[in-house]
Length: 89
Length: 466
Image (cartoon, rainbow over all chains, first blue to last red; front, side, top):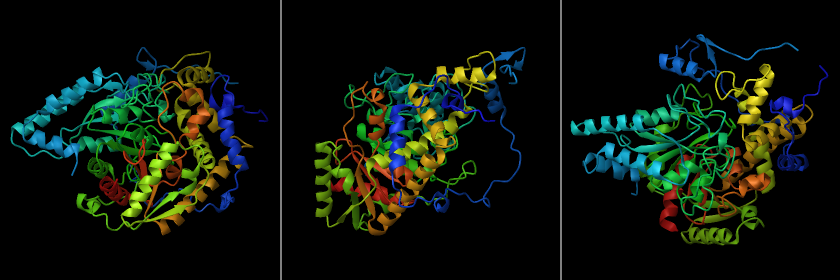
């Protein structure tokens, strides 16, 4: 797996190129001097308590919700939902 | 006490107006409006709900304060059975399967949604021009932008097309359009209101934010929407804010402002002068005012956009046309994904996704992404230190007045820099309110994390002071 992933592949956007406007923002970060530059000493991680989770139980979606999810599916054929062809590389 | 909600509630209770007439009037005004604020109106839903409110009143039943009050929803919130487009081609026919927690709470309180409002596509913009529904025009001068990304919401409130609207604020998207259209707009403390059902832009700063014409209305809506939600693990339980407690402003002793924001070359001279004159009026009331040091604007903007782009690249990766959205078929799955995304995302959205994938990719992440996280920590630490010294931080909302329609998208970098005064408070996850006073684009009032009450208190103080 030595293949280099370019931004167009990473983004799944044809012909995508880094933009000058955005690179200017990144240059500021490269040149910045944070007072706390040790990211492993990060004490403000947005951690969440795992003691406060909802019950691990299946909650059935409503019929309306299921119906809308099916309605949103882009393509249907003879009652089946159609996905794109997958070809292994 | 000024409040549009209380006023309309009284009119409904006194039978001065019927709810159906009120809702019809708003729907008609929304449809006839030329400011491009509407993505879709919710006629059937709204009129059915209004008829129910009328029959309750006719039967002599008591109605709640929000019952029958028409409101708008930025088109990035799920409301079951309505289209939620994010102002994008990709989701232009997407129907919400469920309802966002914040919106459900308003529905439970009896408020009536009348419109899904125009905004920058996926929240990507500061002018509400990045939309398939046409640029939102400013409420005061239609040659100018409505601000963004919640531009349609702010204009609707300013023009009285809705009594209040629910916007979304990731880096200033409620506060800036509120400032541009002379209304109130609150970004609450991150986590005070559940984000469940708000289409994710940058999850670590996304906030649900009310826009209204008075502090009291902001308080009412905030109370209804706040609270812990099992569907959003970042939410926290908060106490209700009472009307009485925010009218007593005696506890505010000191106010700070960032010297470098005001001394910057980029600030409009009139905004600067007006801001400093506000500071003098506050001093004259016996409040101590301190000048504070803060990070340079370019650091704030770059830190915010680096993290926001990384998060949006990740959040929007699910939009590939396979389960929903405007799928464009091609020779195989990968090509279908790529063509669907290339054709359906706007240039600005693509720019942000590509930027996000750049910073998250190997070789870049240490140098840019992790460094931005460290900078964000330093910014938060700076705020924590500041709030040991002052109760409130006051700031202009924007360095300049609203640009003319057509200019912002030509120079994305200039558009990013125009967010200089709003993004810092987003990174700090602090409660910040735009008030339509003090400068042409208003003022931002910020307090320490979870102290949203103090923000509203100071807004009441300013109303009487300037």
